[in-house]
Every structure is written in C-alpha cells, then in structure tokens.
Length: 510
Image (tube, rainbow, N blue to C red; front, side):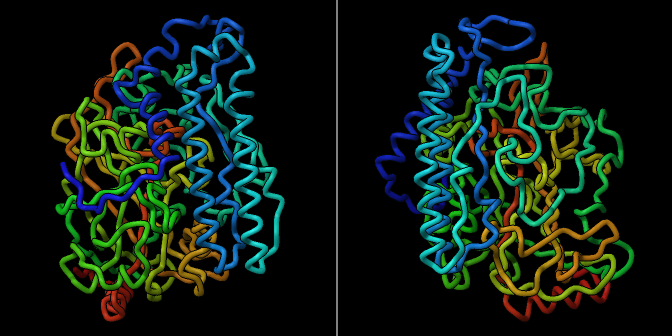
C-alpha cells in the first residue's frame, strides 16, 4: 500500500528518536519480547526485578495541551510546536525505557535517574518556552513547571482517571464522555497484573484483556443518548449524509493539522483521510479551501480523518520504518474501512445553527490511557450487534459480522470560536436532557461510522494472536480507549445552509 503525501526531510534529532523507538518497539519487538522473560521474580504478586524494583510499564506525563485554555492567538502556533516537542520527548523517553531493561534490572534507581529525571529537565525547559511565548503575546503567565514531572507506571497499576495526580486535573471543557459502563469491567488498565511485554505480535499492545467477545457485552450497556449521540425523535430530527469514500487515494500521514500545525509527525501515528486532499501539518485555511475533495458533493471540502486500524500480522507496510509507523510501534497491515458513513444529525431539544467555516473538532482522546477517561468516547461494536457498544475494549465479532468504529462529535458550539487553545473548550457535548450547556448553541452533530473486515483475533492461554488495534502514541500501548476522530468544516456556505435546512425540517438528505 502506498501513500499520497510528499516526502519531507526528517530532522537529525527526530531520526535519533526513530532509531531508538525502532529498536525498542519495532523489528519484531525483540526488546519487548525479553521484557519479562529472563530477569524478574514474582514478589507478593508484583512484577519486580532482582533488585526488588517494581517494573515500569509506561510513562505518564501531564497532558499540558489539555490544560491550556487561555493562549493568545499570536502565540498559538509557537505553543503548538512546543507541545509537539513535549510529545517527542515522551516518545524518546519511552523508547529509552523499553531498550534499557537490562540496566534497570541491576539498578533500582535507573528509571528515575536515567529516564524520568532527564525527561523532567527537558520538559521544564520546554514549558518555560511556552510560558515565555504566552507572556510575549500579552497573555498571563502560569506556573507550568509543576507539569514537568512524569511518573513511571508499574505494569500491574493502570493509570488513574485524571492526570495521575499531578496538577489541577482536566480543564478541557468539562466533557465527560458519557460514562464507561462498557462491559468487561476493565477500565483500560493492564488487568490482573499482566505485564505489558511484547504481545506476541511484534508490538507493545494490545493484550488479551483489551478484547471482549461481542456476545459478552450487555445490550444498551452504554447510553448513547447521554452526552454523545444528540439526535432523537424531538427537536431537529433530520439528517444530512455526505459521501466521501474510504481513502481510495491512499492519503496517509502522521501529521495533525489541528493539534500540531507546522510540525512534521505531530500525531506520532498514521491517519486515514477522506474529503479534503491537502491534509498536511503545513496546510493553512486557504490551502484547505482550494483543495480537491473526495466527497461526491464538491461543495464539501471538509477534512475527516482518524487513526488507521492495523492488523498485527507481520506485514511490512509502507511506513514500517517511518516515524508514525513502525518506528513508533505502529506495526502491521493497514486495514481500510469497507464503509465510511459520514452523517450530520440534529438536536433533541432545538433547531441547529450553521457551523462556521474552518471549525475544528476533535472527539475522543489519543492519550486516554494516561490522561484518564474524561474525554474517551469513541466505541467499538459489530454489525448486527450495534446495540452493544464498548469504549474500553476491542470487540471480537462472530463469523459474518464486521467490526464497527463509531464516533459522535461534540454538537454544541460557543458561538464565537472555530478553535480553542486546548481544542476542546469551544465545543461541548449535549447534556443529559439533550440541550446544550449555557452559553452554547446546537450545531449539526457529526457522526462517523466506520465498518471493517477484520479477521477475528483468537485468545488462547491469556495471549491474543493476530490482534487488530488503532494507531497511537507509543506510550499509550494501543489501548482501545485512545481511539479518536478529527474534523475541520470546509463546506461552502450554500452546502452548510442545506445541511441545516435538512436537519431542522426533519428531512433525510444526501
């Protein structure tokens, strides 16, 4: 499979990180395969080294981007670049964590001294630059230094909700993701003390506990009307479906134009794209507005994108040695959706207003494994079983049934901003009664339903064979709760008005 993106020069520092990550995670997962195989003992149910140190599975750092709700516009570009530096530093530290297991065995303080300590120093310098940028642009400085320290997460201890107790919690818009009663009782952690060693498929996750048979999920266990799906049988009941294909043009890259504009590999994982064909980190609004589109209605140049789904079957994809791909633990065959249903629906209590052009919305959280569940909301199901939805598990579907990924976007807008500093505060989910929070107004809700032909993984003796997983940041261990979806509205005014008219009048339009 190819990719339809231009080749960009990779900075030397990034190449060094890629090499370390490839050693730690790629190449058949040799380091991870020996993570627990030779030099640890069970001690009171804990995974420990011979020195008595509890094994550190991954790294949990405060997600500073979620906390930035007041950044002057003039500073946002520079701040975004520094936030991308923070992500790159975590990637480098995680690779170092994975490749130094032998050294950690003999030194109980190795992780703190050789990995977390230097990481804290690098983060402190980057956070200081963020603070300087904000103040130079006329904003109010903050004590970002308290977000410099990261924690090592033991194998048997999943990260807690929030940010690991380091700071002032999530202030990213109060979006609660609708709850996590998703069947199986796991909350995205390791489960039963199982160490996150190589999962047997050349990657650091997912594991057997990350999967559930769809038959074991209770129907209606997740209330899709609570803070997620906004449509109902009252209010504005129509819909508008836009047909944009399933990435037949093979447009892939590991950029994120919303979170990390101007930063190569800002996502650290590969995205599928439909709709707008100028999706790179370096595209401005004019580039998006003048781009080609895969949507049948040429008035829709919106960009719809999501992390690719991969089958960890040993396939060497086009990005097997690249940043965003195998060099950062995203390995295996990329699975294209067989169907990509993109629909806009209404609001249960009111009519909707037009979305502003270039409105940006991110739903879900690519860092939910370490951030906590506050913003996790995309779900997995199977065709024929879609009354059973799970957020914290990948599903195993019966023969003849396909895997379904569903993302329901925030559908309340603050009426002023097309984006916000943390990319969340300008939009919100509906409340339990279907209405928007005070100060917000209803807009058409974007719902994306992706259907895949996925060979059912098998679980034997606690091991999963040939699993599938979404691409993600390496330290997130491919957990299903990290699934997410992104959107920039680039519909022309006439088409957006048509969407609103269809939704408010109760029509189902295409």
